[in-house]
Image 1 (cartoon, rainbow, N blue to C red):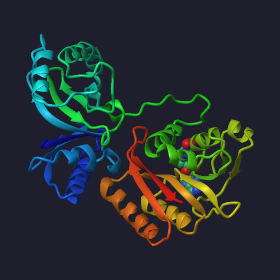
Image 2 (cartoon, rainbow, N blue to C red):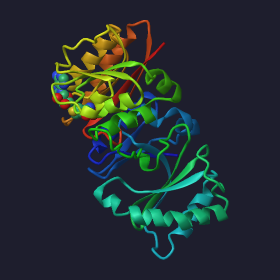
Image 3 (cartoon, helix red, strand yellow):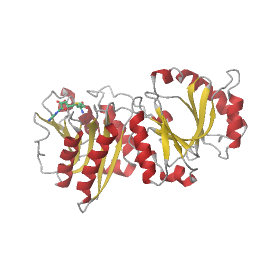
Length: 356
Ligand SMILES: C[S@@+](CC[C@H](N)C(=O)[O-])C[C@H]1O[C@@H](n2cnc3c(N)ncnc32)[C@H](O)[C@@H]1O
């Protein structure tokens, strides 16, 4: 393997490229990114072939912020014949030693890419059959095996790549699609739901989102994040000068405080979870989150850093660095992860879990 493709939100190619360069260099492997603005992915080529363990275990999608998926390129087919696209794909796959557990026929998440969605969905059916016939694909979908990615950038241009169970996103296109809960008061609810599903493991979810636990939601209105906490049977202090949803108040699990989130102190000295979706400068939010975690006012935190600026990668890196430096001085250990989620827009979500 000499190249990895990272899918990302359209417009975030430069941030993804910087991140790939820095993260791979930290792992002592070097290369260069290639991308066009708004193409929805970055191709990163390494100067030297990689050890398999780098792709299968060391370079994990979960350790990246801006990449939605990481797929390892093994062939490019730039001139497919529209009358038979399958034969050249089979040829290339037979040269590759893996047995795949699934095939995902994908496209960039861009306006142009979306024009390929229907074609990709249809094409996956005969391709899957042909791969099974040649025994390149398991009979039943098995996501414990590598996945074959057939990544179309046009109807007759595709890249073939592989992803590995421990280092990939479990979602096709790297996109966690969620149904909007009709009782939720805002679409923002999906950001927190996606974070809970994709950024915490089973044990962390059980610990942090315990029925009866106490949370503070800073910048809560109209209540999309509070809704996620309430449906998990938590008690919420919702802090915002805005108006909170009546149905949430009727649950009896929410108390609304029309107050400044930067000055607010919890009603019972400490809470299990602090969440924050205030539109504020990332360094101010990161400092506030640090204050709550360092003083023990909250055990854990989930918050968004808003990124309306150009230097988004640098801004996120600086905010996380200062937060981690403060947490590192404490006796407790913290797991800090940040991801640009599918439901995030110009913002990233940060999860801080205190290991008790
Ligand atoms: C993106 S909205 C939050 C949406 C909310 N998470 C939801 O799911 O419905 C940002 C909110 O932050 C609030 N806000 C901004 N600055 C604040 C501050 N200093 N203190 C409290 N709330 C603040 C705004 O009033 C606004 O309601």
